[in-house]
Each structure stands twice: as structure tokens, then as C-alpha cells.
Image 1 (cartoon, one colour):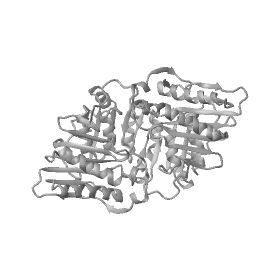
Image 2: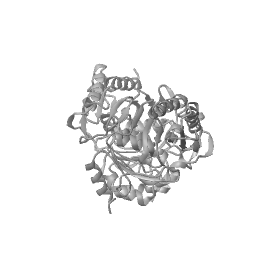
Image 3: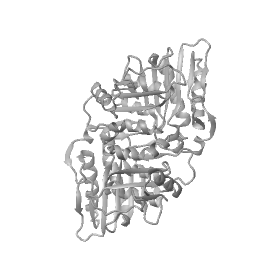
Length: 268
Length: 268
């Protein structure tokens, strides 16, 4: 069984087990702070358990790095890591806002650049996004690419929740210049939208994202032809560890990236 | 036939006629600037024509104020106005982002406060929101209310597309204080989410909204128990004319409103 098939099956099981939960009281419940630092909710716990149970069931030779569970060894002799945000967009899910997903990536090494397989499933409608390194990106089995033509409307995703006033002011040239700013509240699914060509630019310079939020969306966006750089305009990479905080700019083309770097003065 | 039934039937016809369009090339096409000042797209034109055709078919005694068509008299002896944004979130619809709606309101007079009936239909899934003055607010026939309990997560909608850098800085105390800022790109549907209790506060202080964007969501939010004030903290009202630009704060409770006024220094 290929790695990507394992991730797809795990994601589908999560969807089946939690799709009735968003917006219900059952989705909430407080299980204390997870490894990532956020409060774990019932929907998070059910989703993580689904993935862990499945990986144990098939004795998948991996270590899991989970948003809530932290580091869990499935087999002692492992071939790589599964980086899991079993529910990205927990707040949306608990409130009933139809925008959350399960994000799973497989990495052979200890860097973001060693991610070889990625799956994101939309917990509202079951849309399945997947990518394997060098093989392109897919949505429900159909190839997807970022939007390379000049778009009819230029849509910019910006994550600004809890941003510092200084960082917000730094984003002003992007926010004020666009009539189509968006923020849906689940970065992995927003990267999937970027990879599908629905959004042309996605910016998160808060320095708050975790590796579990980004690992799958990162490969999906790259395999769809996107460009992703860090706040110093270098190609994005990172250690795969819980305490790493990430900022990035994802652009559909070099031209868009250059303009953005210029506007945000990232190269200064 | 009640006014609300007319609006519901018109909205359902729009949904049936355009639900296959979002994300297709057919949805786009440039028909010049509409009465509201934006470029009219094919999906806008089809949706408006659907409403106008239906109102003529039943000889509904009204004047229509439309985002694209401007002022259209259906019958000479009219009893009031239908305020129409046939597609709110046209950008999302054209790009394929599943968040747009049709917004229809009926008003007996020439002020926003004279709106007596409101219907919003979600163009992605057909969810139908409706409200008549003094009768409460409904989603698919079930009563809805804003979120009155202390929420598990406090979610704030902020419209900041094309905001001036000064206005953005003014919003910083709200944006920096919340870990759950959202902006989906269709104010009418965002007001419906607010009315359903999915969002606790919605702020748009750009001074860019038109009456057609707001009329239906305004009554829906009020009938669901929300509080809506203008930028001077007075209860929101406005003339029903195309050149009016609106700013507002919608809050689920007086406590949330008071805190927001304080943070934004609206009462200074």
C-alpha cells in the first residue's frame, strides 16, 4: 500500500467519523491543552483517535506528530513521520462554520522539505485533496493547479487573527490594495483553495503557524505549481518539530511573488 | 401571496438558474459597470433577470432597486421597493469559492428601517434565510437567533477589503485581540451567519457598503436578536438610495457592542 493511499484512507475515516459533529454541542468539550498549545476539543480527539487507530490497525511503520497527541510511535522501526492536524479549523467546526479539514502529511526526514505525501479532506463536503512529491496535485482524483493566468479578480488570503498591531500595519499595503481579501480560518484548507486556483496569494506573517497546520498544504501547493517562501523570501523550509513557528507567503506566480515582496518590503 | 413568499420564490428561482455557474467561465463575462459601480458579470445578469422576470410574471406592485439594473418599475402603482443584490459575493462565485448568495428585501418606505421582509439564499447549497418584521428570523423554516451565551470561541467577522491604512489601524484593537477573525467576502451571507449564531460580532467601517448589500441582512440580523449600529453608535438607518455608503457594527449582545465601541473608540 502506497503512503498516499494510507493517508487517503485515514482522512476518509476521519470524515466519516466526524462529519455529523460540526456545530453540535458534542463537537466541543474541553480536554485540556494539546501538544500544540491549543485547547483540545471533542472533535479533535475523535479525529486524532481515528487516525491513530487506523495506523495501528495496519501497523504503519511511522511516528505520528499530532496537534493534540504530540509524538506517538506506531512502530519502533519507523520509515518516517505522519504530521497530523486531525481537525484544522476546530473553531469553525465547533461553531458550525462550514470550513474545516483534516490535514495529514508523510515525511521521510526531519525537515518540511522531506514531506513526500500530503492529504487534506474537507470535513464539510468530503472533497479530497492529495499530492505526492513530483506527481502533481489532485482534488477528488482530478489534477489541480494554481491560477497561472491573470485572474478576473485577484483574491488574497491573509491570516491576521491575533496579529500584533505592528504586523497588521506592515500588511496594510496588501490589504488596502485588494478589494478581495479573504480569511476563512483553516490554513490547510485555504492552501488547498490556493492549490485549486481559487486564491492567488496567501500571506501569513504572524509567526504563529505550527508545522502540523502547514505540512500537507505546503506539498499540495508546491505540487500544484505554487511558490512558497518564508518571511526572508527564502524557499520555505523548517524542522518538523512542535515548537517551530512558521510565517510564509504562497504565490501563484513569480510575478505575484515579486510584487508582494516589494509591497511588504520583505527583502529589506 | 405574502411579500415574504414572493421574495422566497424569487430567491429559489435564482438558485435554480445559477447554481451550476460558480467557478465556470460562463459565470464571468463583462457587461460593463452596473448601477452600483461594480463590473456586472454574467452570473449577476442572469440572477437579476430571474428576479425581474418573476416579479413581472406575477405583476408584483413594486419598484426594484438592483445592484446592476438600478431602478426598475415593475408596476406604476407600486406598494414598495424590492432591494436586490441578486448575487452578493460575485467574486467568490466567479472564482469558484463556495460563498455567495442572493439577497432580496422588501421595503414599504424610503428608509432602511422600512424594510419589512428579507430573504437570503446560499447559492452553494440552497440554504434559505428569511425574516419578516416582528416575526423572527428563520433558516430553512427553523427559527434562528444570534448567539447570546458566552461563546466557546469568540468569532469576529471583519470586512477589510480595500480598507484605507488609517481605517485598518483603527481596527487593530479588534483584530489583534481576537484569535478568530473571519472574512468570507459576501456581507449578506456573513450577516446570515451572524443571525444564525455562528459569528458574534461583524464590523465593517470602510464606508463602502451599498444599501443593496445590507438591506436583507439588516432585517434578518435584527429579527434574530442582533444589535446593529452605525459608526456613530446610533441604531443603523439609511436612505434607500444607490449613492448611500454604509458602515456598521453588528453585535450579538449589548455587552459585546459596548466592548467593541470602547475598543474602537466609536463614541469619542
